[in-house]
Amino acid sequence: MLTIRRGLTESAAARLVWTLFAIGLLLSVLLFFRQQVGGDQLNLLARGWLLAAQGRFIPYGNPMSTGGANPGGLTSLLVGLPLLLWRDYRAPGLVVLAFHVLAFLILDRALARVLSARERVLFAVLYWLNPWRVYFSGFLWNPNFLFLFGAVHLATALAARRRASFWLSFLHFGSLMLAFQVHASFLLLVVASALLFLRGYFKVSWPGAVSGALVANVTLVPWIVATLRNPAISAPEHGFPGRGLVLVYPVLRGVLYLLRYASLSIAGKMGPFDFTMSLGVPADRWLRPLLFFAAEVIGPLTVLLPLGAWIWLRRRVRRRMGRLPPEASDRAWLYGYLLWTLLAALIVLALSPTTFMYWQGFLLVHAAVLPSVLWLGALSRTRLAPWVSRFTWAYAALEALVVLGMAFASPYYRCGGREPLRLALRYDHEMLHDLGIVEACPMPLNDPGGWWPDVLPKAPNPPPDSR
Figure 1 (cartoon, helix red, strand yellow):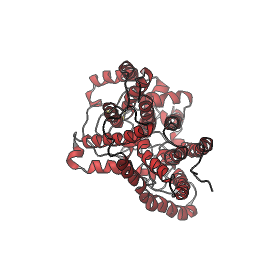
Figure 2 (cartoon, rainbow, N blue to C red; figure 1 turned 60 degrees about the vertical axis):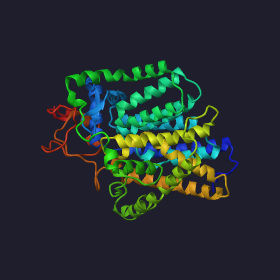
Figure 3 (cartoon, rainbow, N blue to C red; figure 1 turned 120 degrees about the vertical axis):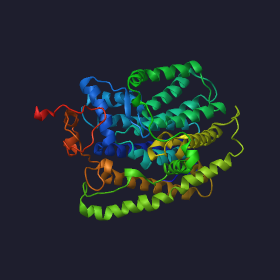
Figure 4 (tube, rainbow, N blue to C red; figure 1 turned 45 degrees about the horizontal axis):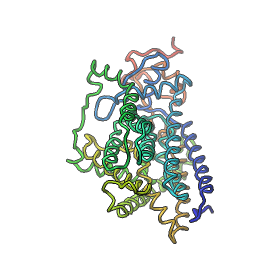
């Protein structure tokens, strides 16, 4: 059996990391080919299809839970440009997958200067094979793009901890502005950057920061023009600032999800398993209880790992929450980065006008996982090393089991079954056939009481076979 030995060399660790990377990539590719289309996906695909097929640029993203729509036209580009090359509903999912690959490669490279060889392996297990990360790498959804922005945030802040760099500041602040156009949860990184800068964790080249923000905001110009013409595009309708301070529950809910990101405890449509549509009724009878036990019984217990890790981390640095001294090590920097990022999350949760939803923290999955990596790394330097090794590979096996279950039984990766994504649509439309959506998974069309994407015409083009 593979063991994470105390004397694990860098080359041996690299081989293990790349092996785990290949496994995680294969799992993500499997999910990519099995992805399904729901309402959020149709809204995004409509924006991309209008750009690719008709040259029409929609300057705002999907509707937000607070009302209005995500600002900027970045999502139209992220969805539309792949459709120019491959007219298939899965094409934009390649960008999502590429973002996840880049996120891991950036994090692994940046953290290589901080983590030990065995901790790099632990990070590959707990982050790259993480069911949360793998599940949201396989289908189109704007929160699924966020993993990359979180990785860039850590990498650029770490690289700029001792000196200000035009290009590092360009990337850091440019990525914040791009994240702004993908999802409103970008505030998690903005507040974290503010706290880290004030506490001396990274230095800023202001010309680089301003240049990066301006370049990233180019696609905001059409949105500003559209908002001036129609203020409803950006008008919030629900919630009030400071809701978390008043109700408390939203903050507690957000903290719980930050813990669950580093566990096997899944949420939402990740878990209603149904194998009847992919493997048949006999397989469903014994696979569904197995997956239920892994995800719903063992999964919640694994939350104890990140909980213990955060408690360990806070105790370890309880006297280091002041300004970071210049002579501090990179490891001390990482400890502080994680704690200040957690504090930033608490501030945003308290001030948020709405209750935290599980997808709103994807920017911080790397930060949610790293305390467990550091704690297990510390334990592997003690007499508990053999137990840490056994736990690591057992945990990796459970991750792969849960991901495979989701790939064949979760609503976003199966057509039909229990709690499906299938929508009744108000009209038929050329886009549904041009992208192969209804051919891949039929859905009711021309239903007077059905749903319809917000940017497609109410009197749509007829499908090709009816012309």
